[in-house]
Length: 188
Image 1 (tube, rainbow, N blue to C red):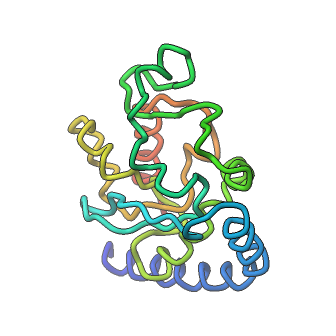
Image 2 (image 1 turned 90 degrees about the horizontal axis):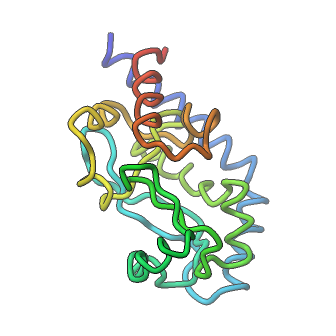
């Protein structure tokens, strides 16, 4: 039954993401143009993410930072932490820099509305992701997982998840994982 469920879920996800892509294509093109015209560099940002069973894949997003910004993300971590510009859950697993100067003006809008995630419809179409499932995390963050956190990788990561729609501004990573596991146990 599990194999059939997975195949049916992927078929649904692929069809829904294709329809979604067609419906949002004017918005998609508008933001692609906005990224290109307001900041030199590529339109899309491609991050290595951890997917089902720990498999790595390239996750696509609209680029919301200046080109090349990700290379120095931890460069001034301590200074920003001292200034109170960095929020983390007590474990340090979730890093959020407030008022990050690397974020472009169009990037702020994209991030605030989560529209920077629209290119992940392609990831869903090719089968790396699902519409609903645990949010994929960057490869660099997997080293901080506790053994029970790995259970969130039993399913494909999703464009959205319980955590994202219920308590997005709560940066407690353990609570986030517990919600992911709740989804995995109760999905149908």
